[in-house]
Length: 153
Image (cartoon, rainbow, N blue to C red; front, side, top):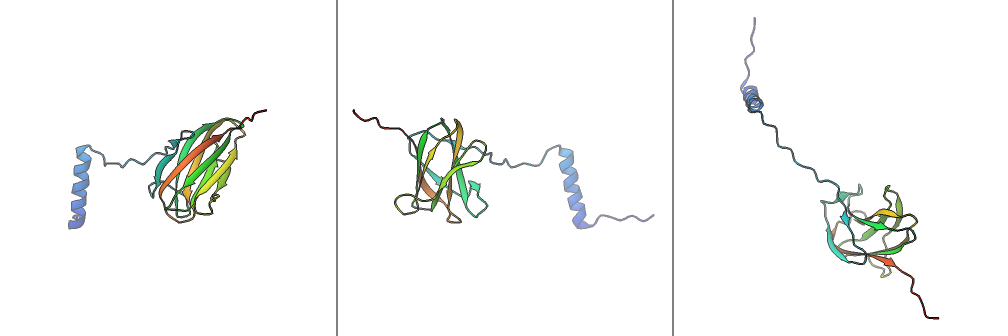
């Protein structure tokens, strides 16, 4: 009967695995970041930063999501300003469908301004992303609920 002794490189690995198994400990596991959109308050401007730690878009860029509850027949203006990247705004319904999208503002620059009329009450997602692979950086975001101004008769 022929025996095959463990060679030097395999014996060290076997000893290590055996000791680890005998110790009853498990390998450390790194916790993954859970998707957690930031709640957005109406009529309050926020300052934030778009980074490579945010949601990958699949186009080389990244996106950051915010949630807001809106009512049927609300009319909203969403304003995104950044000196660091060409911004895109996307308004998503709770089911993930796109309600509206815009990457242009009235200033002709890289800011974005989006107007939308809400047809169904519920939770909505406002997605901020950079156009293409333009990166990220600091930005300001504001959601304003538009109201009719009543005139004097």
